[in-house]
View 1: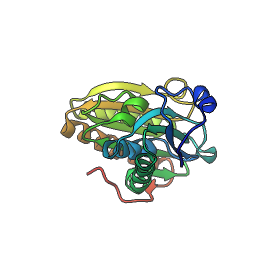
View 2 (view 1 turned 120 degrees about the horizontal axis):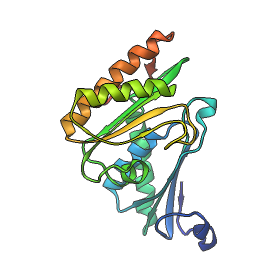
View 3 (view 1 turned 90 degrees about the vertical axis):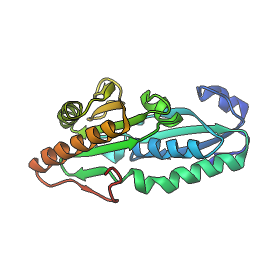
View 4 (view 1 turned 180 degrees about the horizontal axis):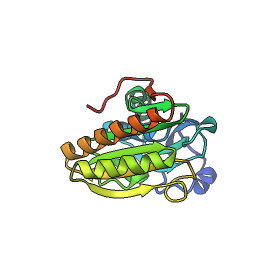
Length: 213
């Protein structure tokens, strides 16, 4: 969605970190990390900037989040293009989201973080960034431990149900560092997460092809 000329009264109350006359909106009930990663690619490709990211407690009753991402720009065509780029990337960034009746896993990776990853997760711009998430939250703790033991990465933060999330039942490790090391750590977290969730009943499945290889 794009608002070519946002009303100043609304803009004053959106609490965005920078005021643009043109804003774009990407919002969903299910998914947060995939939308952020997709928007990260969008702002790299267009003359736009992420000005707000929020985490609704949603997932249609599941363990995770929904998302609200607002971008700003000076030209409606740039903002519309950014939203389209993000939408086009979602099938890729959902590729490492795995679901089962017992919970879910989410893995994300980029070799060069941009504005969306920085605003959402504190990722250093221009450096590799990885997200390792498991639900229920205890799965995420074990995944994170495995990841940091596997490769030399910088730990940015660990988000848990009461810290860094909107009270979702997730444990999420945010890492940065050398691209190869971050990728290796994310893949190690994925491997143990799939094993643990499988032991709780059914092997978790992804709806789109994995992109982290």
